Amino acid sequence: MTFTPRTWVVGETVSAALMNQEIRDQLNSMFAAWTSYTPSWTASTTNPTLGNGTLIGRYMKIGRTVICHINLITGSTTTYGSGNYNWSLPATSANAGASIVGHAHLLGIDRWVGEIIISANATTCGAFLPISSTNTRTDFLTATRPETLASGAQVRLTFVYEAAS
Image 1 (tube, one colour):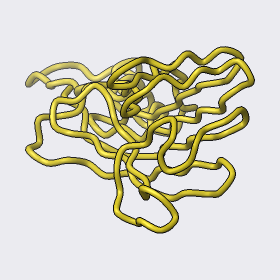
Image 2 (cartoon, helix red, strand yellow):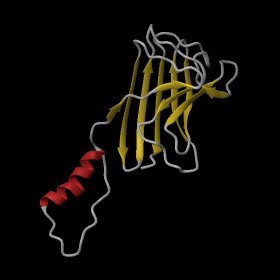
Image 3 (cartoon, one colour):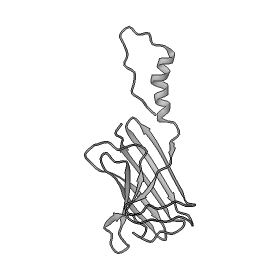
Image 4 (cartoon, one colour):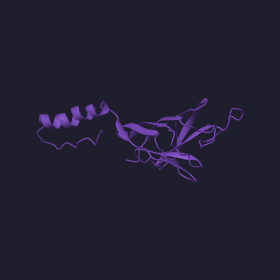
């Protein structure tokens, strides 16, 4: 990950080690592999349990910019809980006074396309998808909206946001 650049002092001797740290290492961190993390999956009423499903997250942080992808695949022993779903972020969002919007996909019986919302100072994001095939207004993804989730359903979230630090 990138870090705050060094403040140079007048008359300081610049060494190869300092140049490598300040230039090479900074650039390498921007082209490095993404960092894996395990997001938590929660609901506003009763939390779901992953069971034999999979939930993975990956992100790249460059300065305070976070690029993130979360992928959930439900399994035969997944329980879906109740209420609006949220997923944890790899870093708290900045207090930028605005919500950040990213992409959300649900691959269940049908394919649903929506958005994710990250509020200021947030540690989680929520997915918003059409309410049903006949009502295209959006609302939080739940166990039964826009369709009833079953084993093998996939939720894919991709977004970019500003981290608090």
